Length: 218
Picture 1 (cartoon, rainbow, N blue to C red):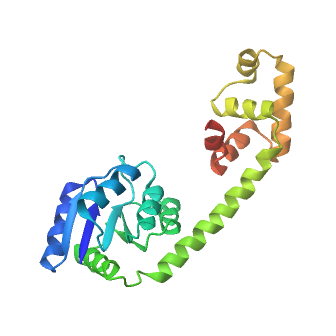
Picture 2 (tube, rainbow, N blue to C red; picture 1 turned 30 degrees about the vertical axis):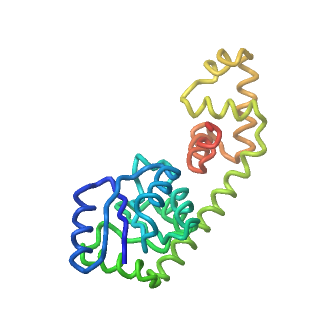
């Protein structure tokens, strides 16, 4: 049985490698890399391990679900190791094919038990998996519903809303867009009406909460 640990905390990785070795499991810790490089390195230098234990949040891996999907496509089982409770990111990793999640807050013994079970192709906490995915899908439906109302904004109204989110006044927006102040005030009024809110603060808060501002910025 072989396990590859991918984590940017060397002390944790070393401790888990030693713990697995004491249980007769062949384990190695490797530094994180973006998906293409890591998958290629795994294939060329390590081969086909029974399991890859992947930290959820690592600066060297900007899109963890993408790496999970790439590994799963190569026939590799992936177990997520998480020190945070980023429910959306964890759910996306499960949807990408990860077999389960183990928290860094658990005891070392419990983490090792879960790693062994996952490497042996045993099912990992199916109830937790189902519940996480259920919550994610529910939240995703809510996000899509909130985002839908922004589709009614014209391009000019979207631009005005983005500038309001930057803390700009109506006068500043008018000057930056080379339009009259009454035009901007009319557009702000239209934004509030379409979003079903009564103040600029509420409009900006809704844009943040729904994730629309993040999408508008890309």
